[in-house]
Length: 119
Image (cartoon, rainbow, N blue to C red; front, side, top):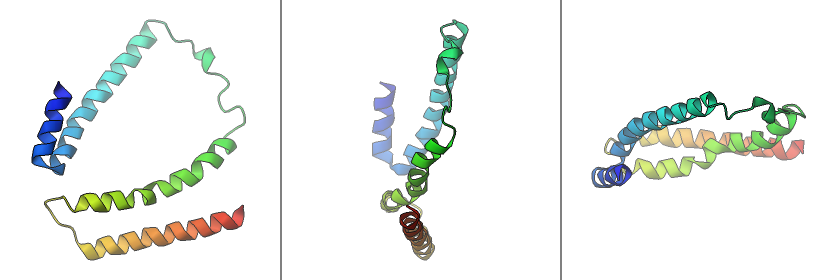
């Protein structure tokens, strides 16, 4: 019921309200998560030996899979965030936005070219 009220509030007042309600709910979610984890740990249901082996083959396989995704993550989301900018009440400088997006696009293209050459 609390989430339905929050969603109704956000839909009626705009995207800035979404950010403000997210600030409130993230604190509540972190507290619930910490309390839940502490209760599970204190009840004795955790055996840390079941978590082994950790990094059996080292960091190399993890970095090999995660590195291209981590690099492309902010560039893939740039289009979504530019669409959200249309709905903000305070406008930002379009020239600085265009320069920043062109810089990110160029960096992503250069990374893609060098990534293909390395393989």
